[in-house]
Image (cartoon, rainbow, N blue to C red; front, side):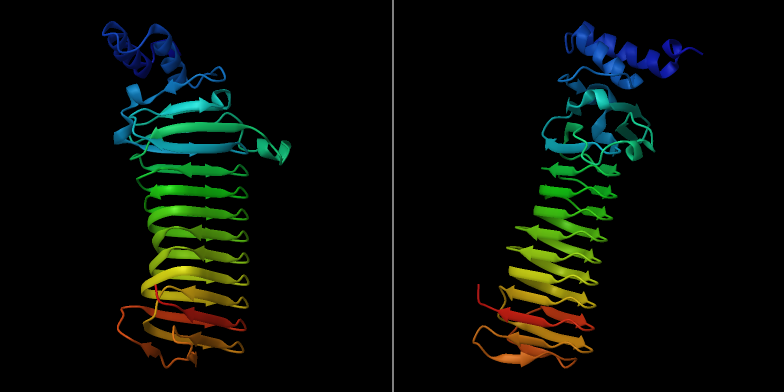
Length: 312
């Protein structure tokens, strides 16, 4: 069966013709949409409004790239628009998802410079579930309001102003998070993790990189770094908080003046200074200050921990 007579193509062309007849799209837009369905090339600067025919609000959006840098912005629109880098991508549709992927072969990144400048920008409905994966390209996400699953082998990940349950994983890239609200699993094997102005719970883990959290609120969170340091500054803690390191240090300035504080270390030193200036040594016997649901536990093998409390 030829591609022109494929049932899916015939169905989509019929739907688009009705949209043209009702003056909802132009003939030029119809052609662009058909090219998007068939994975053909686009001209730089074209906006391919896939959502008109893909009912994106009922599907996941899957994005897979090799070494291209990608920026994804959530909008109030119901359409997916590729606003930059159209020539680098192809689009596929299934009953459960819309896939935007690189035209490059799976192995092509080994033959490209690590300083690739290919750049792609995509506007998507902010409430659309999103899964994105790159090999070496950087990922920027802004203004998303649904589930995010973001993975990169060596690229950096930046998440800004998202109200989402988020899973972000990078093997060697850094992860930067600003203004994230939700349950998160954030893991970097060797890169640093920075979080600020966020309200999160869940798991944050770096194996050899540093973990920095600032101007945030954390609840029921496991944070760990194998050999990197953990820095927490001007942040309020609630619920059960665990901080674990093997050889790294933990330094925290907390917007708390009450709670239960305990620690365990083999050769390090764990100290707590309350908001009145009194100093305690942390051990398995919890230091209890005031009335609070906070329970902070710090564990290290050889790293030190310095915890400072201050009233909000």
